[in-house]
Length: 186
Image (tube, rainbow, N blue to C red; front, top):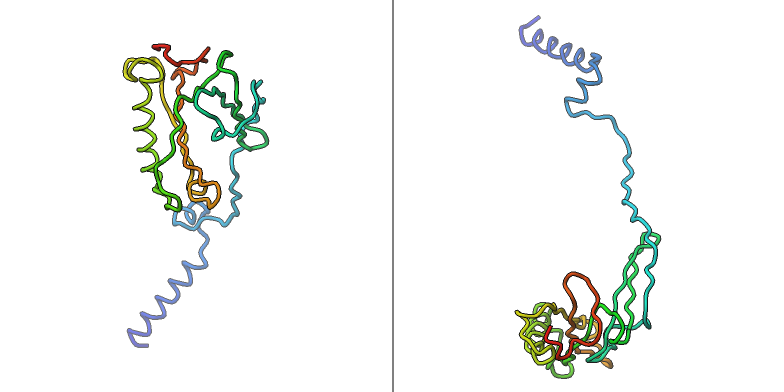
């Protein structure tokens, strides 16, 4: 028997012994051989919440006009996030008041300018008109500002071409407003 043949026979039996050898389960798992299992990925459920007692008339926020007041409500039911917006009289407690409605200056048929352009236009318009409405500059006011802008679909719609930006104000701490903030010096 030649040395090469002897070497090949020894390698063959060595490989056979290691393949048939019974190691512990911990040894085989540590070598990266984990038992095959099927894992079912589940999405965590959202806890159902009781619908809040809402006041006012349900409304699409883009249908509101300058001087209108509104509330926003949100809750979870059957893993669905539900939101409702209501129009309320400004002389009753409310969360938000629209103080400016301005149309984006894009010509008819113009393409969507993008989210950043819409946000920049809204911020500039809302900031510039705040003092005229409240009677004090924004930096000295207790009120905060935000805005609603149209989405791309509404902006580019052939018939509707909704381009309105709604500026609204509110208390940052979530407390309700009572009465209009117009010339309130708040």
